[in-house]
Image (cartoon, rainbow, N blue to C red; front, side, top):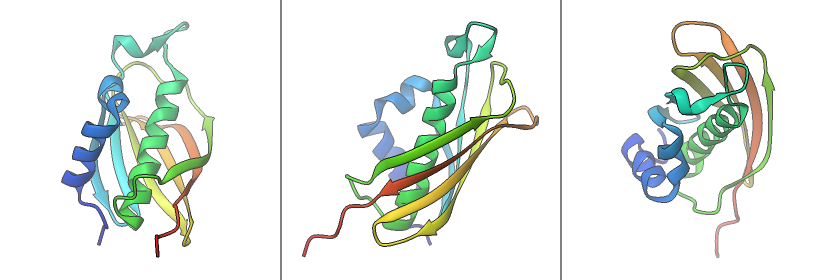
Length: 140
């Protein structure tokens, strides 16, 4: 069972991560060690060349891995990204994209996960990210 509910995570990002709302990221599903988020990707997401801006996909991957991390450790305010690597595999058009994240390894202080980002219209894989979140030690 997830250590943070879907409703709790949505409330957390609404209150404390305004970029999620600004970028049009929505949390669709959350379970222990897994999460699904989407990004609307409208006209404001376009970069030269008629493609979606890479920093938006990077942000989507990071927030997805944040959700995955909190699903394991619960609401830990200082759980932070220590590493995130993304490979852009196919040119994303404008429109909905879907991120699916999962835990690869959960230790006491580090959570390692991966995130696959797909074209939300039923298309293929657009990007793949792996990342590590650091979890602060519990206070004695």
